[in-house]
Image 1 (cartoon, rainbow, N blue to C red):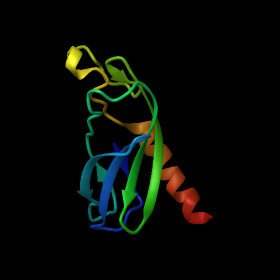
Image 2 (cartoon, rainbow, N blue to C red):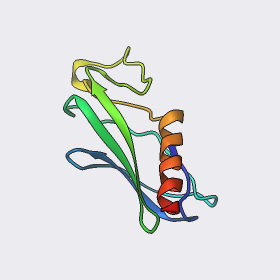
Image 3 (cartoon, rainbow, N blue to C red):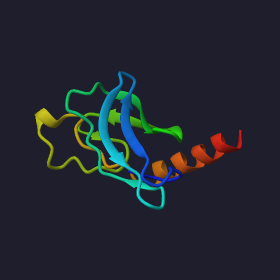
Image 4 (tube, one colour):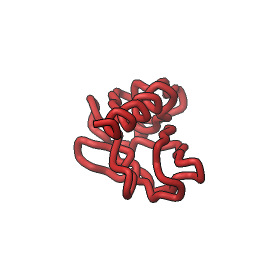
Amino acid sequence: MKASGFAPGEAVEIWLHSTPIKLLSTTASADGTVSATITIPSGTDFGARKIEVRGATSGSVYASLIVTDGLALTGYDSTGTTAAGIGASALILGGIAFMMVARRRAKARA
């Protein structure tokens, strides 16, 4: 997952919704970007979810995600997952990162 538009060194959290689950705490780089691999916890209910990237001072941006049996519809290859990993790992890339940046910029203009 990649996102930008944060303050340099800003504390950033990544959350999975609808039932909020914190996936990661990190810090924005010197250029205000965040790049991280996140894992969708096993046992996550299937269906539409949102990923929130929340900056301590910059606010939040959201991206949509659909969790299905063994993979999230983001391009993750589930070949190596086991039954315990149903709904498990997902790498959030390109298009979602673009949506997050675009939404952040739209929010800043409002």
